Image 1 (cartoon, rainbow, N blue to C red):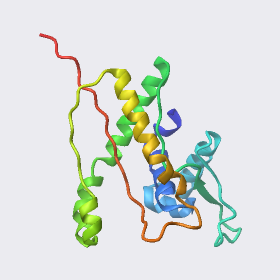
Image 2 (image 1 turned 180 degrees about the horizontal axis):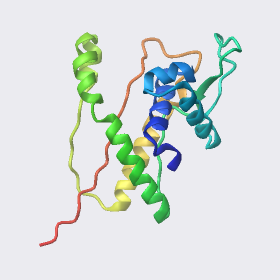
Image 3 (image 1 turned 180 degrees about the vertical axis):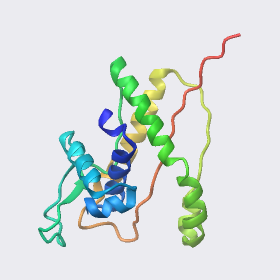
Image 4 (image 1 turned 135 degrees about the vertical axis):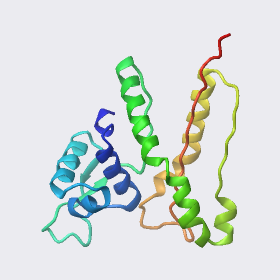
Length: 179
């Protein structure tokens, strides 16, 4: 988890997950770092099993090293106190990087979407009362619901009419109110 708690690494992984295989040089321009810094971060991500060599990419000519994300997203569950601290740090970095995504989407993407896509997109803000165990169950069920769609990403026979959809999910328990 600490491997992702660096903003540049998280940005690199996010680009690879969202846009597919790339080189350190191409990623450098997208994340605002030099190719050598991006290469270093890619090797670090690879050590943790988050990215891998993608030399099988059809347009890879062998002169540049191509990288791909191992998964299309991630969810972490903290077990011990150390991993809770790491999860908290990673969560803050992720929220910071995603903070302007909804506004950019509303400004740049929504206006050009077809009507059926605009109807299906949306925002939800729901407050519910749960125990910690119930919240864990809700999260697990959401993951189960999404799993078939996550698993089909990148398969050669993509469903006709499908496109990538970014889902951001914040689960923010409130602090207990004491009087």
